[in-house]
Image (tube, rainbow, N blue to C red; front, side, top):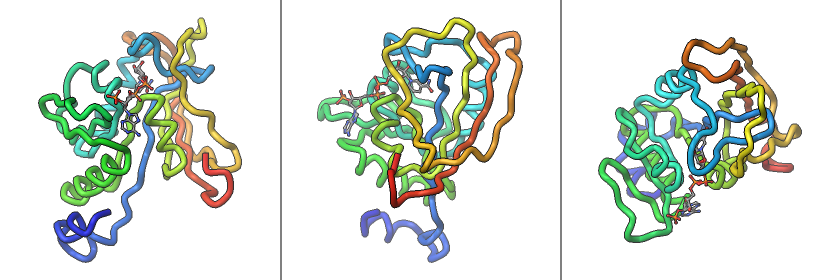
Length: 194
Ligand SMILES: NC(=O)c1ccc[n+]([C@@H]2O[C@H](COP(=O)([O-])OP(=O)(O)OC[C@H]3O[C@@H](n4cnc5c(N)ncnc54)[C@H](OP(=O)(O)O)[C@@H]3O)[C@@H](O)[C@H]2O)c1
């Protein structure tokens, strides 16, 4: 965090409060998360959970994910990472690299009183933030025909992550598949980071 964002952060309690980096993703059993710059399934229940899970927090995403959504997410600070200096879009903060994105997100979380920075994809951004993430909140999508896709979540190292929560759900009327919400907490940072 920069000196500037530390100065702007408010009370000592606020400045020292830890802010977790959490990756939130919906992942098929074969690791696929996307195809042709879109989600390979429709899962309304997960969309509702995603909204609640990210509301009032800074969300960090890659430029392709932002463009696949089409517009900024309401009620959240949208931080989009792009190397394109010309890139801009209404309602988003553009960061030239991941470090700047996370710094901006941390300042925003402190201002909002949020306890998390939520990384919302896509694959490039997940791969780069997995080594520094504190928690993974995954929706495992039990798609019957395994979706073909070229975009995957990075593999999770069992030495570094422990499953701490799981709830299984049958597909609702607007869900393409059964699904499970699964939480992983980091157990080791020093060894293999991913
Ligand atoms: N299932 C899920 O939960 C989920 C969630 C999110 C996304 N998705 C899917 O994932 C796919 C998109 O993922 P993706 O991996 O192709 O793209 P992405 O990670 O969304 O975006 C990649 C772009 O981010 C920018 N970028 C990446 N690393 C950077 C860095 N270190 N510094 C500066 N800029 C950086 C670059 O933008 P520039 O080219 O502009 O420089 C790069 O082209 C879509 O299919 C989407 O639907 C799925």
